[in-house]
Length: 302
Ligand code: NCD
Image (cartoon, rainbow, N blue to C red; front, side, top):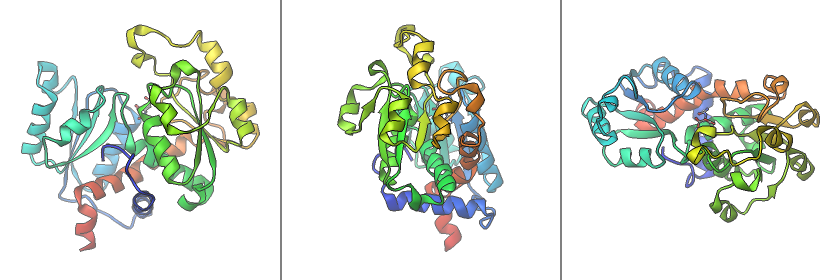
């Protein structure tokens, strides 16, 4: 599970259906006998906690490694770390790493399933899957996503979430627009053939029913260059506030939120915000992903 770029609609539906089955509790011990290694070499709250809960609750043996408490801090390479986890019998390696391409590199050095839990500015496929699941939950199911309009708002340039969620939304049949200053758009976004709008207000005029806000990722801005004139100006055009939700739009954000920047503080936990539902969806969706990636789901079916 490195990217969703080549994933079909049927494959997305399979993950959604399995996640729903996991959530309803019908698949106890789905990962019994499997060994899941969590290798998080970059900060994480939601993703690491929900992968760990997903794996443990489904009965897997779980090993957690971080940058500071692993031999990475002694200079061991990523490849040697992956080979070590492979030798210990990992069935799945969940990898978060600051370098784009790290998960693809890891997958070349192990027969375990490698699940990309975020690689630099690359991809974050399980985030996009849980977003589809949470949005489907709010709108009445996966099939209800088709034909809806979603605006992806903010720092697209540095966002691995955007690079996964945009293809996922489109494969689910949604129409996508971007809202961002030109300095926060990647050069390749011309090839995505999506409208680029200047503000959240314009996105609502375009018909957006869902506003998917991205974090302003200052830690990824090369050389500390801010790429925006000021945070206040960014928030004026790209910030989601109460008046936007009053139009009936739903709010999504992968977290962590910079309150008052991407989203005004008073709407983060508003009734039209799916942010808590997105986090909650992580457990069922990541259980499903681990079961599919390790083959556990087929073993149970047999
Ligand atoms: C994202 C990440 O780390 O890629 N958060 C997450 O996994 N929920 C988004 C971000 O850091 O902006």
